[in-house]
Image 1 (tube, one colour):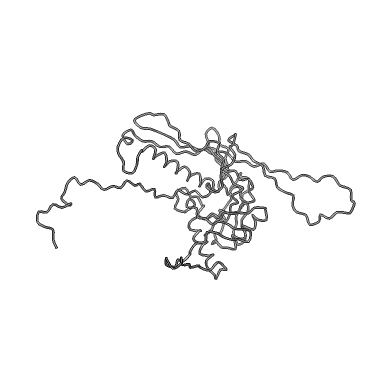
Image 2 (cartoon, rainbow, N blue to C red):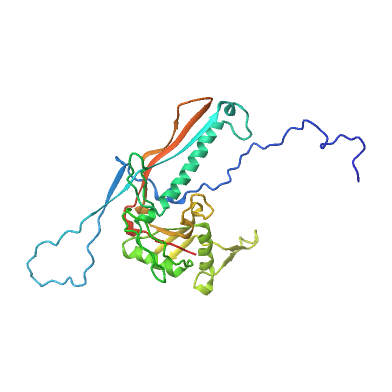
Length: 335
């Protein structure tokens, strides 16, 4: 088998048009499960956003009274707690030259609009990581930025069993967890149950377990191992139409204290450029008591043109409101 003599062939041809599809694939993950599940809270009216929490007096096992007893003076009222967080400003800046806007690009109708969309997606991913970070708030100043506290700075419930040397956050956003002397440990149903129990005792009902992809896999593995007391692996067949499928994932966990949706948060992954320990963290969130509050909702602002390019900024000013810190729980330093 050989090429015919003097036959025109593609290896010698000049001017073959390129074959480029009109589809541009966005390959990086853009899901933001935490922001998507907690909802939006009230609009702040100041850069310092405050809210109140009303705790109850501890239950008493000695509340027995004499028949006909005179009513004594009222007991001291349980004081409300006043919590706050600062509004942070996050932004993404883009620019497209006049020429880049005019040339024809495969799969892109308008380069400027496409860049604005991409910057908005990137900003939302940044916000997801910021809101989950083990970071205390910062008031900022004329030469320092304001920072909002992440969820971890409001969480105090965890499972302290084992040799872990956590120094817990105060739970008001003012400080973060100190994990420098912590001994790592593997994710287990035992420590997850311990953390959920702590939140349950304090009145919370976590309905969302958020894990990095690595720990989501670990969770599915340990719950599917019957030797660990978990669920047996399940195989099913759809009326014989399709081959039997092996279920290797657990997306809902019926804990001792309620049903919990189990989800992977890819923004917590260890290969994320903005990850700062979230890959080793598991969050148990009561979605009723966490809100994203916008002082300025995410929007695009056209910037002054200083040359042959259109410049823009996608910006948001926002904070995290944790209505009832004790309703949540977290596990850190998961090996």
